Length: 144
Image (cartoon, rainbow, N blue to C red; front, side, top):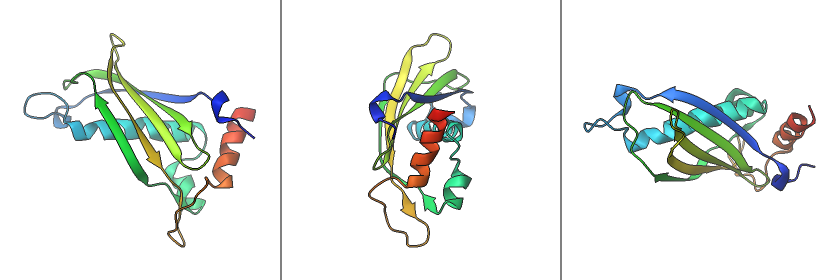
């Protein structure tokens, strides 16, 4: 069994913000930060071999039940950013921690997290523990 304290499972993506992401003041609209988080989370889940299609095929969906964001510094449009996603909890729910950095300077611009729980597709019931299939994916990731 994998101990949560010993894992450092992180993925990152580098994006350039688009004009359509910005508000009239030329900075990224606050709601778009979650889209950036999502892209890094997608890469994180691909890294362990549990993509959204694989989640669905396994009989589970993982809705976000809680989220948090701390805006440290405004991000302008046409700006390159680096987003990291780190899996920090997984036994009973998933918690993914995010940090958005300026890709050029390395300065932290935003941080946040999301929490997700497994819900069975057939009964639509929330699970009080992560499905064994997901835990097996983590185990095999660290064994390989």
